[in-house]
Length: 120
Image (tube, rainbow, N blue to C red):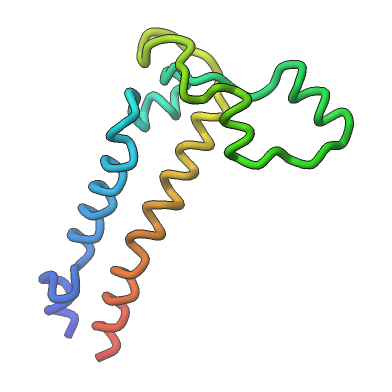
């Protein structure tokens, strides 16, 4: 059964990798930056911090939910065009984390199918 697996009988590793790449492109398709720009802090995203964040931390307030955090830092507005500057951005790392989590979730069922094929 390993031969069938390797040749894509149940998706195969190459197909699963391609599906992950497609998922990543779909998740970024409406965003003007790339994963590389997110990781290199050149995407133009703001970061959370500043007086409201520092005050909340100092007061021991609960962690802001992601949606609230993104709204507070106006994550949908860029502070410069992607690739045209540099600014540290925790938000960029948050987006990469979300991208990884969503990609893994979408591909997970493929991995279960592959494992099932190996057991036959």
